[in-house]
Amino acid sequence: MSPYRFDHIHLRSPDPEATAAFYVSAFGAEIKQRVTPGGKLRVILDLASVPLFVEEVPAETAAPPAPPFLGIEHVGLGVDDLDAALADLKAKGVPLISGPTEARPGVRIAFLQAPDGVRVELIERRG
Image (cartoon, rainbow, N blue to C red; front, side):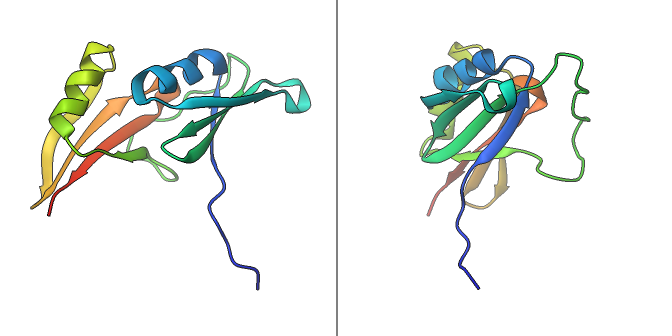
């Protein structure tokens, strides 16, 4: 059997340019490429060394349900200093959903709202 390796995360958005701009502004992602498979715009980003594809869908596409739900629930990003990261994101206008909280000793988390119903967890691990 061939070994598996991680390839990408794929998000859908009615406005992939605006969604990509959010990840660039908020989290320092880098736009790597724009392609149009099947005539739909796909913006390909590097988000913390993870390829993130943001692909266009019609504006009338159903929104995701409110969490919790089955399937991928959030994107998690590690940080060294949660308080500093939250202050930076607050200054950028990124909405805080919950936190910061101590998930368990040495682990602090917070959740933020990204475009298109996507939640981003920041996690600080100490010790």
